[in-house]
Image (tube, rainbow, N blue to C red):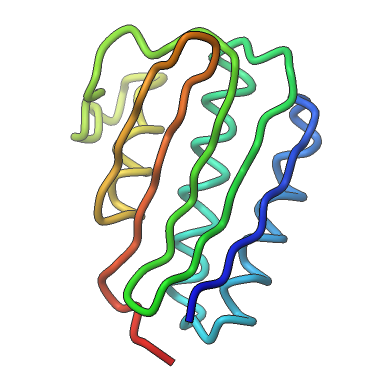
Length: 135
């Protein structure tokens, strides 16, 4: 069974938690375990933080939640500055470093990550497959 929902939010930091709560609720409604739902929410919120706070997205951001029998995928589209390099660093920084934990955290929450830059939109696709059983 396929399920999908698309959210469009203004690119303001106060909307990030609203998306996180919505993603978690969708995961619970789809029968995803609380641990996996929390990981999906955490990774999505961190990606949105990077996009809205650091990427300079000024136009609306679109977040799509897609459920297939074997996976959950989150697709985030924005019009901010594209990532300067792909893939970003996936290992956690040294404890004394002040930044650089976002991408390793996202990578720890999802099983695959894809990133595409189009003419006017960037698309980040986050996929969780491990622990997602068909219901």
